[in-house]
Image (cartoon, rainbow over all chains, first blue to last red; front, top):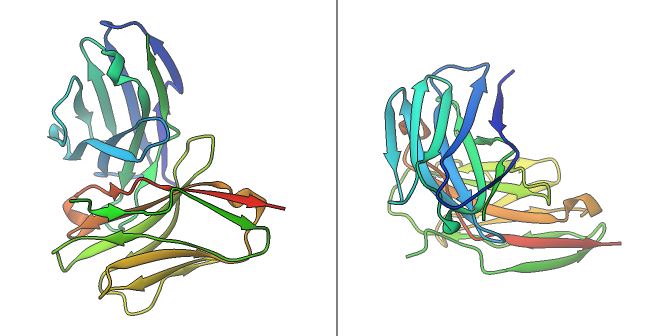
Length: 112
Length: 117
């Protein structure tokens, strides 16, 4: 069966520090992968999506970047965090043959 | 313009009653998909139900059904026989174009559902 792993679950980082959030999918190949951010009590904002290794599309210009070094690995990064980067980050994937997207458990990031 | 609109910030329902959560969408693409997700306080996003734009019948999954009115561009979620465990935030989402193309889901702002005993 397919599963998605996202870590860490919570993170507290100082302003100006780097960030690396990792997401991996098991049990499938060539998935579409996504990073979303959710501000407190708000909807989900798409940050990045990828349809293949090394292929990244950015939806919102910001302080973050994404990479897909392997087929089932998606990484969200920042060189220097801002206070406004605080939020709940969710990784998601969908198989090519079906429409629904499945989400990881999320990472709650607090920048202090 | 908003692609997905959920006009109800909060809804309240008694246990065992049915509740409808509203969702309207905006797209000019003839091929699209509509989704509902549940987000409990733990934060995980749980897929509930899917409706394709070419599907003739309304989607149903257990106690969930999607009232798809294409001409009105609405995709309301109906939860029958509400349970206390249904208390959560509910998000409507849309994908434009075929899902193989990799386009992402666009989400509404959500509706908080509270079920009381």
